Length: 270
Image (cartoon, rainbow, N blue to C red):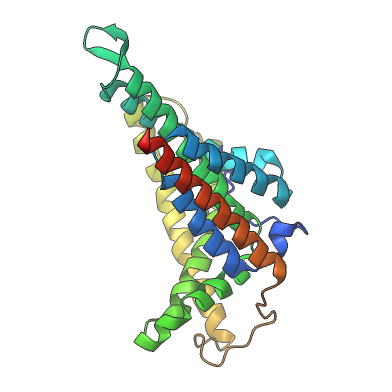
């Protein structure tokens, strides 16, 4: 299960999405999120579905990787869908048993939220799948550079976000190793009641926290040994430069956003 988690991982490639300027990719991702939340009908989500499928195909990332990005939160998606299914009581009653009631409005909202969250995860995963952590750090710093005039620690914030994304796969791998080691010692992690498994998680969380603090200390020591002193006077191996394809990608995204807004207005006037 843990090996299937792909959050924060980068998959090198030479697709058109990989070659886009990371600053534009961040802006496009923000516009994409607005696109998904701009309306409350399935027609608005249909625009997001088309855009997501197009981006997935252009990124040339295997489709199973996008499934892996959704798989870890599948239980939360199911719980959210069930809550909306039984707690929303609008529209025609489709099924009723004692105090449980399923209505047409509950089914629509459950499916709508399920599709929206799935698209949100799969679409935003393209950003980390096609952008290296170092490049992502530079892009965030450049986008937030106007805040430097307000003495905002832009470089430090970008570095923290990049390190957090970078160490998600590392912590997942470390957790998997600790679980395997505990099972080899006879620990019952996947069996027993819910409370028993919860108590057994302490034998995983404690070593994981100790390992995380150790890694953080080693990283801080390594940065100090390399005379790291923040973004002041720092040079970059690769300079960020925009190209025509970046403006074309941004324009296409804005067209999809306009389409989602138009569909939302049309569905509300009906």
